[in-house]
Image (cartoon, rainbow over the protein chains, first blue to last red):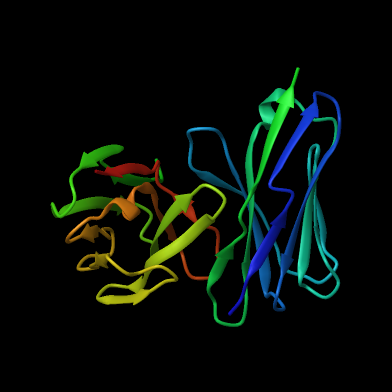
Length: 110
Length: 112
């Protein structure tokens, strides 16, 4: 069945450093969504990518969808302590099921 | 305010004692689902519902039941909870299967 792998599992960075998390699917996706979960909170939707090769930006966050629509990345420039949390990708394949990755937990040290 | 409301937030129970976690959304969404979150495993779907009276199994349905008698409510039922169901549970809703999920605040369940 469809699987979505996410790496790394954890990332500790100094405030001001960049951060990237990667998402890989075993099958071609129709779209991919990204969510952020603050410690003790619930996942909150960030963005959805639909087109092959799509790149979207939200302030310091850059989201990419691969050309083959099987991978995606989230890059944060100059991290801040407010970026702390777990970032999940979620891919939707031909079955319409949305499969969540295992998440990347980001810790930012001031 | 558009929201998904889950109750209770925290629940400690004993093995075998039936419990229900409620979930309600006020956005008139067709699609609702339940997830459990465990360390290192991400969010795994338990059950989902595409409309009233239509429910289907997700990836980890064993030991759980759901119902969708009304559009806004999607309760999760554990008929005979076991310790391996200790987890953080999230209810989510969306307009349809392809759109963003709106999550509730979560229910942390401990089964002893």
